[in-house]
Image (cartoon, rainbow, N blue to C red):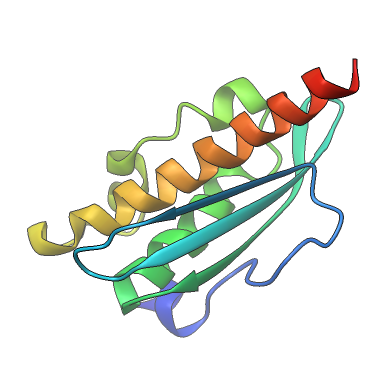
Length: 119
């Protein structure tokens, strides 16, 4: 509940190095994760989420779990890691933690594509 009532790292990074957007058409949740990378680490991370309380809480938690980590470590964050860090989620809301982890992975993939395109 704390991450729903007091979400961390909410917002946007205008000059983000990577952006990942995912959604679930069944429930209508949409998440965008923005990352800023320095020396192969996630220096800053923000999110914008349209969805239920669980979607907001999982978005907040995934940013807390990823901030300061090396990219290879951050992309290992799983939906279970997110749910466990929140003290668990009801089964019906597990898809929200899946979205948060997927949005982070999409942002990392976008970062890699952008970096490759610059070469």
